[in-house]
Image (tube, rainbow, N blue to C red; front, top):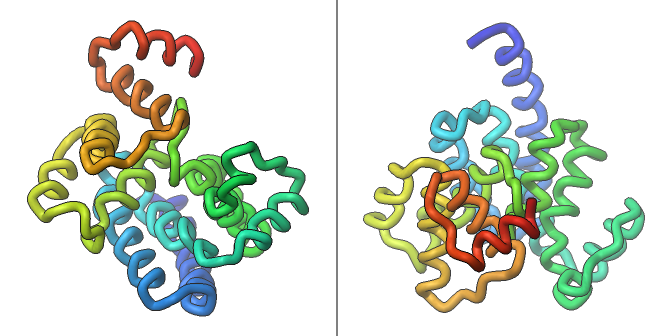
Length: 212
């Protein structure tokens, strides 16, 4: 570990302590435990994604920090910070919980790393062009061991894949259990296929052109 990593680790240790207190106060026991499992998964997978473990831990802690807020609070916070929700977010403000987490992490906890903040914003649906930090959080949220819809065998298999293959496996598993894929998640899926070097269908090439 070099000197910059040591300094980062010390800084994030303070942020971690404050975040733990915040999420305990803002969430139910069940949500708090989910957050800790996602955090542990992020940290375990961080080396595979070339993400600093201290950053991975902060991402896991912050991703659902306000998940249990009422809808009006999500809308109020993003409005105060100049963001106009799209139609899907207006219909389901819960989708804003990642964006609100990013706002609070920057404003109240002093974290300004753009990759981390964008990863929080996008962790629910994904997006075209997500970087490895965002992918780490996206798959860790799905693979944390408390999820009832996965098995230890599935998690072990997926966690041994490459990062982009993990995205594909998670999305295909979600589709198999009947979860409807949002347009943003579909674009992420196509992007992951491209990054994994897989051949794209005609429809996927169209999505590639739209996303790119």
